[in-house]
Image (cartoon, rainbow, N blue to C red; front, side):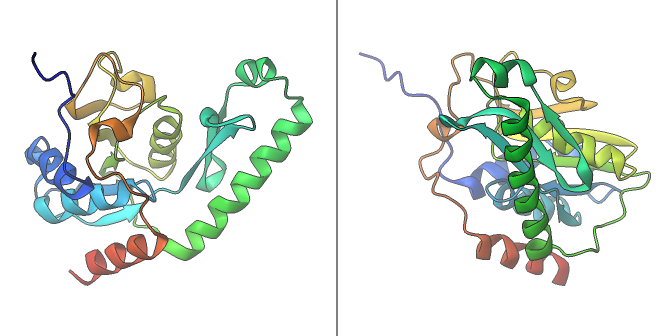
Length: 216
């Protein structure tokens, strides 16, 4: 019987190198690679190193349903950019007050992570092409908000680049100008399914990779 297992990446580093191969047109241009902490940063680091581009982060926090934290009601990000589906929240029985408190909690975590990972000195994106990189897309909530942040920071063009996204997902679903992927499975239900090693990325690793990119 044929193996029905999906094609997988060894880890985020391999995924990043393969993704960089799909982004050759951006090598040594005015583009900036923007990783989504934490898991997107190892992927973004490989892209930035392979293509000789600067690396920064866009800090986004998914707003998960209280009873199902992995199910995204929306996302919030630095700069006050947010996207929340109040219809889905109401189906989970949440009041507007409960949703507001959940958003406030996640936004506080965004501020803490911005301070930890980058501080108050983001790279200038004015007139650049922003390559927004994560380790994969499930619902697209975080990607949409991240692309909104890139535009708010002045990016001329926004390219969403991920190793794996659902086959029917399009650039417009994330308000990006272009979408670049390595895999586009039709039966996708979890990003981690396409990685042999999908262990959580520690904050210390994010800090280290960003420091290495700046030194380069």
